Image: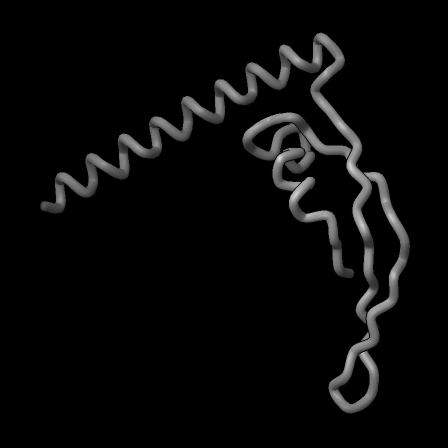
Length: 91
């Protein structure tokens, strides 16, 4: 049973490595065509601690954030599919 689990983990790791490598290749193809990155407006909020274990939330405005059109985070940017679903940032 232990060998089967180990083999399954190994197969999963290899599949993820190939998927990440393919994603990297596709992103670099898109970089050469100029279509690899997008900018998505993100709503930014600032949480300020107050007395009595309370917090005040202030709206800081919209901030344009660059994202990569990929499955995984690439080139130091979040993937656009994830960022478009999480458009609120807290500091």
